[in-house]
Image (cartoon, rainbow, N blue to C red; front, side, top):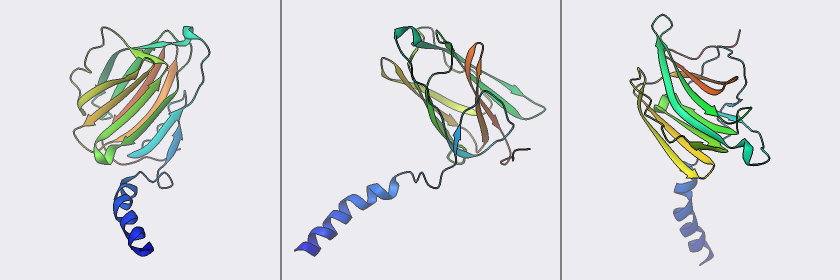
Length: 171
């Protein structure tokens, strides 16, 4: 009976565990205010800050992008107003799976938020308001790409650079 219960438990729960993301295998990067020129196809990124008070509630404005033909690189910019520094951000870049997930905290969507516009690499963008102060953004890509994520502080922006080609190493 004990053996049957063990087999039943493994049968029910093992498939869910097998689909979970293995964090030991993922590259984890702290987002910095410096563009380093290091592109990777797959990584987890984060910038963790804590805020005190309602005055730190930011607003995510319209997202914009532009493509540079010479470097075959597209920059996606997320403008955040109403804060003095970048809020807590967590994300997962899976360029080999053609998607990016970004969670931004202490931020709400702007009332005039528009779509990304005509992008060279992004097929679709979805913004999910999870709560009053949490947005989840999903970018679906049209091909495998390499990425770099960093932020700027004046004005506050999260920047995602995408390029065709393989991973590059730090100089």
